[in-house]
Length: 135
Image 1 (cartoon, helix red, strand yellow):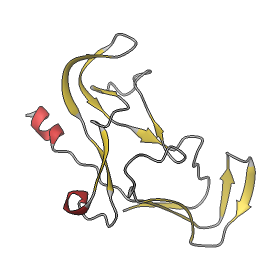
Image 2 (image 1 turned 45 degrees about the vertical axis):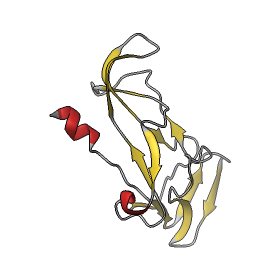
Image 3 (image 1 turned 180 degrees about the horizontal axis):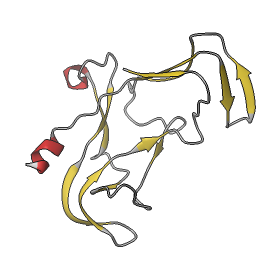
Image 4 (image 1 turned 180 degrees about the vertical axis):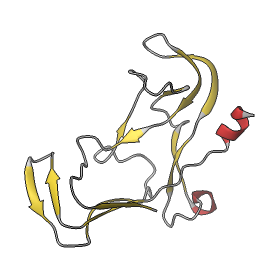
């Protein structure tokens, strides 16, 4: 049952970060004033691959929260969909897909029955003040 539920998960996110007042940019080490409502980060996932200038792919290493899946960098677990498959996103959607993979072994020797994709913006986009919207 869990296998069937996880196979049907589709994460469709169009990310839109809006900024209200002041941003601390860790990439340049400067603080920049922005006008209210100015767009400072946007990704609608309309390309065919992940924009690595904005996103990092996390690969399992340190395990936290007793998670039952290993994170891998694979087109099987991180992909993009368009049109009706994009569940309401206008240009495209990111799909992070868990996959049942019995006895998958990580580089550090741990075994998992599921693999999945995981991304973050660490050291690429970090916002100290403002608002974030994911639609």
